[in-house]
Length: 214
Image: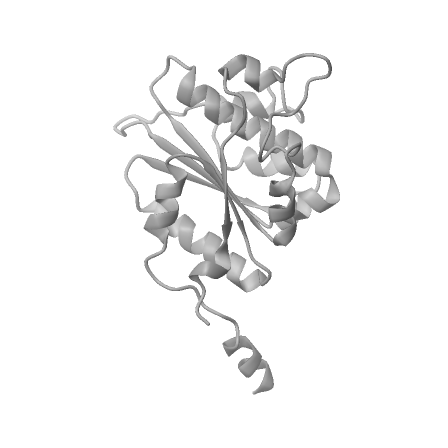
């Protein structure tokens, strides 16, 4: 009985918040954080279901508790997006950026206009390897900007939702972090700034508690 009581004490999310979050995603990626793991799970799962009901939309889910290095990230990426063999690297032929750019087509189906990546427990990799986390964020955000503002192909809007604990919000406050800036490229201009002409990526920081019951 005591275990059941503790479970019932976990706050629940209110209804009808998903459309407001999707509206935020029209203009930016999202960093969603909360202290309680249960709230984070509710948020990510509910949003994934909501997005999955939208027309011309793909939803790719990353399970961050199992992403601790580049190999484990690529392992999940290649299970979200159909494509050729994925090398364990970010840039270059066969790398993650190449697969993120891919746009599968299926006979009899209208091509997708939106692709959402929902990354559960994104703070796990941030704690384990902050540099790699920054590189992956930079890659996803860069591909999104390229597809939206540079590519001549049929428009595909990419948006990533990073879900995790308060450390994600702390990372978001850092002007050097990849929620606010492109990854530096030594003495040169950042790679994605050169490719897209955009000075910095666009992110919205979101406290999940705002849609939790009290």
